[in-house]
Image 1 (tube, rainbow, N blue to C red):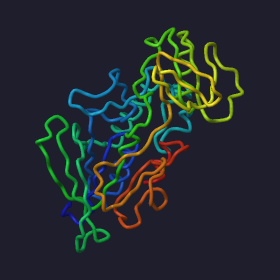
Image 2 (image 1 turned 90 degrees about the vertical axis):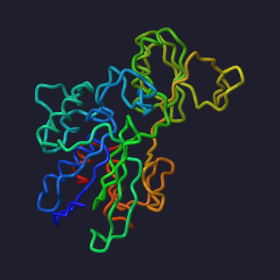
Image 3 (image 1 turned 180 degrees about the horizontal axis):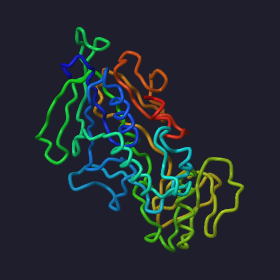
Image 4 (image 1 turned 90 degrees about the horizontal axis):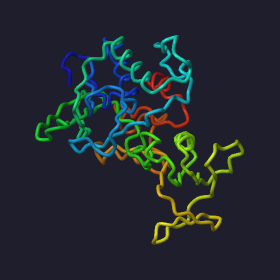
Length: 314
């Protein structure tokens, strides 16, 4: 705790949500001491930091990135933080490298420098504290992400969880470029934004793509080499996939694009925040566990413009 009569907050993650949280905490110096931001990697930006490797880093931590040619599917005029627009010269739908630059500029502009890089949060436990904010404090234990023997525990008045969508249910997070799949037969499961985008890229390298999904059939023209199929109902011993309509395919590659889930492995079980079928609950206004009003889980709403949403939640 700060000991200065001000509230001392921790922010977990320095992606867009974490930077936004830190920016708004710093904007209230009469109430909050400068927060501490815990960041697992060596960079700010979260998933907007492109990493060509897949799987895990050398320290065993998972790699979360996007594919090489990704552009935003939200125009920059809508996507930006309300108080910090993208550069005017950029096109409306920007490459992911421009989003990373934008977040770095946001960090510099608002002087968000108190970031502990290479630090993983191992646990956070609520403690009843007489005179504490809402009668609570949070004991946050963190490790050096390279040397886990270097562990520290610090007490905070509030915690803002901004670790993003880290628990993935998809394998498209291992997809970076289309070229390794050139000319191959691919079954792509899911027609979300990433699934459709990757199908388009694979078509450009003459892959033969079956887009398997449980939605109404797409009525728009599909690119060459891309066809639709209903959901997969079974996988035979030889790797053949059987679809709901009885047809079969034996692809060289199966690519899952079935969405993401949320995970908070460091959060003490007695907080009793549940994740079920992409829903995190119970949360007041999808943000605060009612029993723990000094804990904020930021940015978990779906089908939103994320950066403005983060800004409004602060």
